[in-house]
Image (cartoon, rainbow, N blue to C red; front, side, top):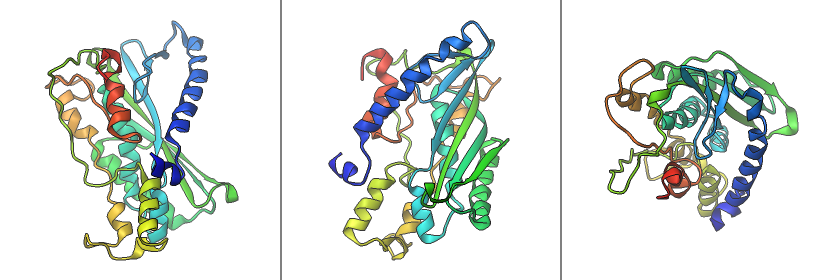
Length: 270
């Protein structure tokens, strides 16, 4: 944690800020009470749920973080779309939801059509593979307000009420299955960059690594998107569930302690 803070990320302060933001978000929930779109409260959830009567709409936000800075260093942007979709779709699948759409916002200090081309080409390719559509987005040229590019997304998913994965049925003795990731996904990159630059120098990203690629390409390895594979077991909207999964955790910022415990929260086992 000390090195993470040296890298410019304060986990405790981030958690505190999230709690502040959510406390204000909750003050809006009564605005839709007994109306379509009433929020379903679950403070341990990876995404928000809205009650649409016969089903839930699931909505969540995330971004590629400072992985973008590595892409900028080596001029390679075509795989970041996989990371962006993975961050939001794999949050939604934690409830059993099928992501159906994603919108994205790119804040940039200077619009570069070539960068936009590669970012969106990668995102579109990932979405086609996952059966997700891109109904809209925003490109904002904000000058010196940002250094480079900041790319975030909002995903919308659908979920049949009876198929919601709550974690409430988890009990001691249940099996835990971990799905392996080959890279860093899109989290912890401030720390990854801090360690590399400390061990080598700020120009390390274009230098050959012991993995056969330059360091930049090696750590830019795109995230695996697990949601589509999990939907084969859980069933897409309107399909039968083939396998009983009691809980799913998306291991992102905060690692296993910060995310697995969220799934266990309702059981008191975490």
